[in-house]
Image (cartoon, rainbow, N blue to C red; front, side, top):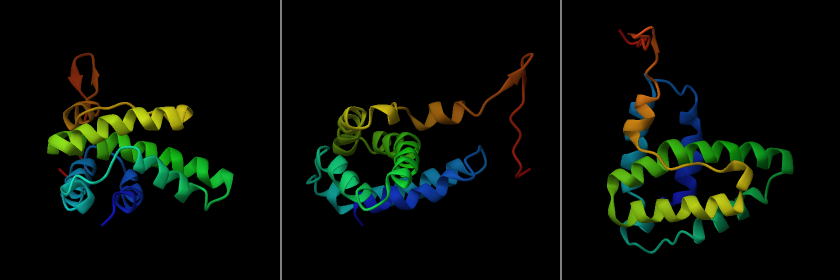
Length: 138
């Protein structure tokens, strides 16, 4: 599988994006990311990814492009960067460099690097010191 197709396929994991569904979707993405040959062989460069996205977006009308760029930004921030960081090495360095390149190419759709732990902590909510996070799986 190629990296662009993996990122596009992961858009479906954005709904529902909640405490119950994110961990499973993240683990599925992480295992699929590990199988991307371009990363295993360290032959994918950070500069190639925005070029692939740009070529893909060019095949769609402008209004649709904006929706896709926004969805991809979310996938990059919530799945790609944290998963690559967990994998470490080449993938982590690639994700960090790509984040900077993406910000230059799509300044209105900038995203920031984070970790899985920080994202999961974002689901925590408190009211007067009482935890409000409730799992629908219980």
